[in-house]
Image (tube, rainbow, N blue to C red):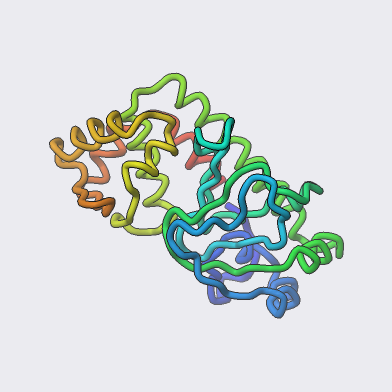
Length: 235
């Protein structure tokens, strides 16, 4: 588990910010702006200049890769455990993916110049971001293995559990269209798998509103990829 501020301090909703020593967080705070993450908003698209970094305190940001401008596949998902805009930390100034708000919430946003200054001042943030970078790489390659090896239903279950973990609730919104982009299958396949999960009593859904009724059942029905990704994120 990432360690940072003292146990007596009020926890900060974003894990990366919460892991900063108190003196460093207080120094950074005036440069942070709280913003709303509105459902389906594109924070940046392929080729866009990265002007901000986002530290979600609620909601989920999904990263979509695209081959031809129309076919998309989710290549990463970010919640309160991380940040969106990681390429800036690696010296890349333009986005290679589409970043959009999958579940609404809030985030702490910082301008590129202020983020660069903080990364160069010798504090704890760069080390935390290196660790988060590895966690994201691990998520990407485990998800790639999941896409190749597991059924549509198991991949959907994994993604629903990952969403629930990040928003901290068993109720959230994901349309079949969004799910099809996330796991790389047609909407018809998503509808069949979601219908199967509903018949088993694991979930209910209506117009994209999903409620997990039986989380232990879902965890038993998913593939090993879910626990592998989660264990890495919590290490």
